[in-house]
Image (cartoon, helix red, strand yellow):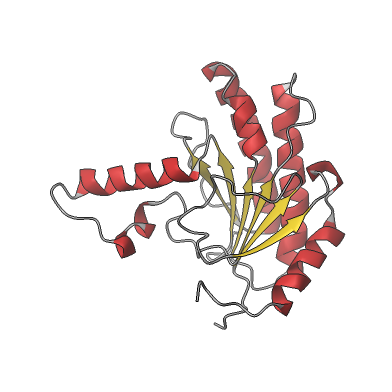
Length: 219
C-alpha cells in the first residue's frame, strides 16, 4: 500500500434536500444519487474498498419527522441501497443511530467481495459517533482506560479503512460534524455544484486531483 492508494472515498453533501416537504422523495433522491456515484467510484478506482455517503441535510429533515415515518422511509432507502450493493458485489453497512430501523444490519450481498463496502450514514453526527463508541468500549471494559488506538474497533466504521478522500459536494467548504475521528488525515476536495447536478465528471476531477497531491498526513 502506498500513500496514494485510494481505499476509502467519502462523499459529504452540503445542500438541503430539494423536496423538504416530502421526506420519502428526499430520502430516495439521496439514495439514488449515492447509488449513481458509488457505481462510478468502484469502476473508476479498482482498488476502492469503501464508499461512504453522508447527507447532513437529509439528517436535519429526518430529525423533524416522527419515529414511524423515519423508520419507514429509511427502511425503504436501505432496501434500495441493498439492491445496489448486490449489483456492485459489495456489502452494505448502515451507520449512525440506526438500531431501531428495519434492516439496520443488512447481510452481505450475494456475490459480495469481502473487502468492498458501501456505507450509508443516517441520523449521524461525528461527535455523537465518538461518544457512542466510547460508551460501548466502557460498557465492555468497565474501569479500563480507553486508549486512542482502541477506539477504531468501536466506531460505526469498525474494520473499514479510514477515508483517504473527503469529497464535499454542494454548499460552502466548511467544517461539518462528520467522520471527525476517521477523517483526521484525509485529503479534502470540494465540488461546488449541488448534489443533483454532481456527476461522474465531477467525481473524476476530484479523484484526479487527489492523485496529483502530495499527502502529508498532518505533518
